[in-house]
Image (cartoon, rainbow, N blue to C red; front, side, top):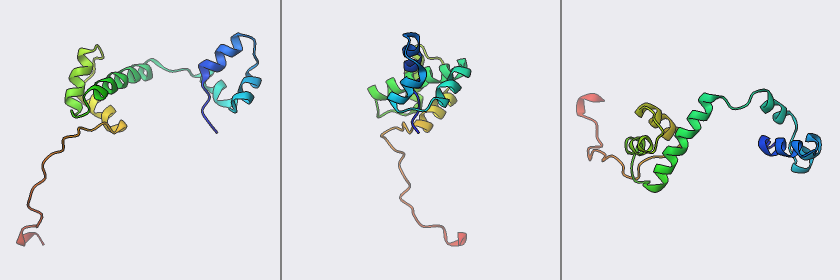
Length: 114
């Protein structure tokens, strides 16, 4: 089962094409479309998406920087959020800095820690 693009189905329905026919032609089921009509995108979900989009734009421009820099860039672009929110979005999407932290050269445990 694929996800229905609800706005497209809605636009075609306004033009007079039945939802059943649209879903059949696009090879979608009708149930997700009607579920979307009953519960459209909420304001917090929309705000989260705008923040994620601002972070993605900053990451696409400078992929070598981490979430703190992306937070600053997104905030300057008008998407206000906390650093924690920026970190959550970046970690969910896998947007990491290309620079890694240096690992310790010591790989052995101390003698007493065995």
